[in-house]
Image (cartoon, one colour):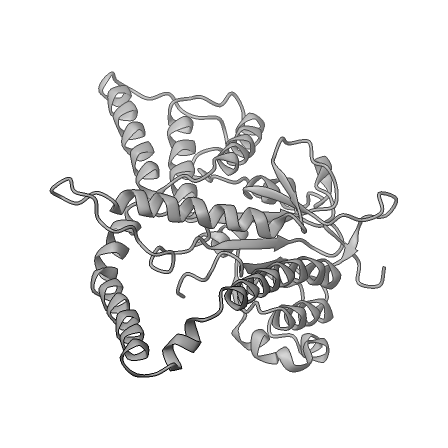
Amino acid sequence: MTRFEAGRPAVILVEPQIGENIGAAARVMKNFGLRDLRLVQPRDGWPNPAADATASHAADLLRSARLYDSVADAVADLDRIYAATARTRFMSKAFVTSRQLPADLRALAAAAAAAATSSSSAGADGETEPAAPAAVAAAPRAGLMFGRESSGLTNDEVAAAHKVLTIEADPGYPVLNLGQAVALTVYELFHARLDVANAAAAAAAAGGGGAGNGSGGGERGGGGSAGGGGAAAVVASVADELRQRAAAARLATRGELDGFLTRLMGELDESGFFESADRRAATSRSISNLAGKVEGLTAPEVALLHGMLSKLTAARRARGARPAGPAGAAGSSTATTAVPTGTAATESGAAAATAPAGG
């Protein structure tokens, strides 16, 4: 899958329980220009005929929806993840409202473009080169993560996100149905894109004259066309090189960051850092939450973290034997701790992002 523009993120439904809600989510996605639907372990399996009943003409999105075994797998290729929830969590995490979401995504895209431009601005001989056009720099990929109808997202799932996404509603009852939550969120994104397009059209109309000059005759009109074509050719001639240089400063995906966190947890296990399995679980969640707060971490910076960790662990191993980790920790070095079997999804404040479909 190619990188899509930052204003059109993936929609991730975590363990959706009602097929009709999946269909409703697909329908509003198509209404408002989104196509990347990801499903994490739907309760009733997949495909689900109940989803077709509410998807209407968005059945193609249901057919193209991708199925995942875990949240970690579903978000591994994304640069920014928003966890939709209606309630305040115990953890400290930045949040945006659905109305603020488009601006937040634009800021993310601008930061990525600035980093790519900076990396490609100096040539091998030290001379300044043309900055990469916005279309050349790879746009960051974002994901909107919605939880179970009955209990929303768990604390561990929210901790894995970069920011919390909320939809402003009456404080007396802010919990929305899953399909409604997706609809309100993607509508805000569509409306923001429409505003940008309308503003651009108005600016072009106010500028005026360009088309008239082109059709006014003879050499001036033809010259303008040739000039535009020449500029396009120049851009095309350096596009591949700029893409390569921009890639060196691309944002790290969640999967790349999780790879480092998994390794870090393993090294902490081996060093005897954790006093107990319970301490390990709490620390794992805190580290994942901390990583989610880091803005604009690039792939080379993640590689630098790996290098630093390698140096530290090599020094420790050179000094001798390594103490064992806590009981139950061996072989379970994961960046995000899963909810134990039999534990209620709402335990420890894991609150709902959506209400039951009948509610």
